[in-house]
Image 1 (cartoon, rainbow, N blue to C red):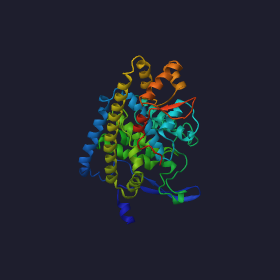
Image 2 (spheres, rainbow, N blue to C red):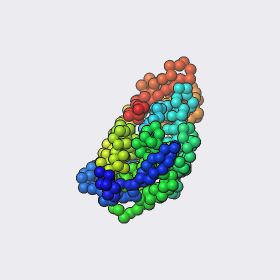
Image 3 (spheres, helix red, strand yellow):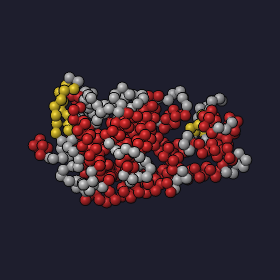
Image 4 (tube, rainbow, N blue to C red):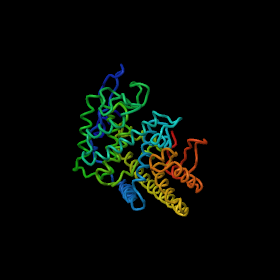
Length: 390
């Protein structure tokens, strides 16, 4: 069995290293693309379906009254889901309250982690306009991701200078030990070259799938690797203009199939079975793109229905619609926050909120007589689907 594995060119090799006082075997993945070549024929139909779903999602702007509203909330949902895979326990409403104003009971460290992800996503997308996907950009994104809260003491923006491991309580019983520190830069340089190579003829979705696994196998940072690896999926699709806007996020799919996700990453390392991973990944692209399109459609329908209710109010319509427009990017609200954001008087805001309550658009959630907080419940419920903590 071991001689067969050694003969398989798709498999990397091991280097013995000492970490935390234990001698372990660290894995060096072979450079991409895999050799022998991938067997893509059985995946052609699924590739076509995934590409078609991606194209349909990319046209989502045609059904949205304001694409930015959808993206504002959808990026936050992805940030939450990607962080939840790593064990974060906050909710979407926690994040939104955190961004609006301090609130008791919100798990601060968890919410900071999610907020950092939003900042890293926004930063990376802006940087892509001037800088290609590269080790430099990846380190910059990691620096933003780990700037505050947990992990801020683990070398933000720097490739690791000590050994890490995945699974287990110590290196000796770890499920997987990534490359030693002196191999990280070489592995990442090879990955950067593959991202920009044009000779393999591989479809973009296949390249993205390969890059994600390779990055996870290199695990170049002490912390935050999973989140950066998932960000890379979206960045590659946007950089190659497969998506005009960052609307595809696979974290919900990875979260729902968490055991299979981690298992298939390990199967690539141990058996060189890229095809099983590719089938899983392409299925995720198709299902996630279809779900995102359906979510956008449901949001459009809800917003139009609620807007029609407000347009029948008569004189209060104008201020009520201003508050309603604000709710589409801030579906949790209080009077002081709305006064500051909309530059309307507190009495005007209170009256508008009252109208929105009467129309069953807003619901009061604090149970207080003063300092009340309200939620655009149906809107938040649609966006929160699948975000329950693990």
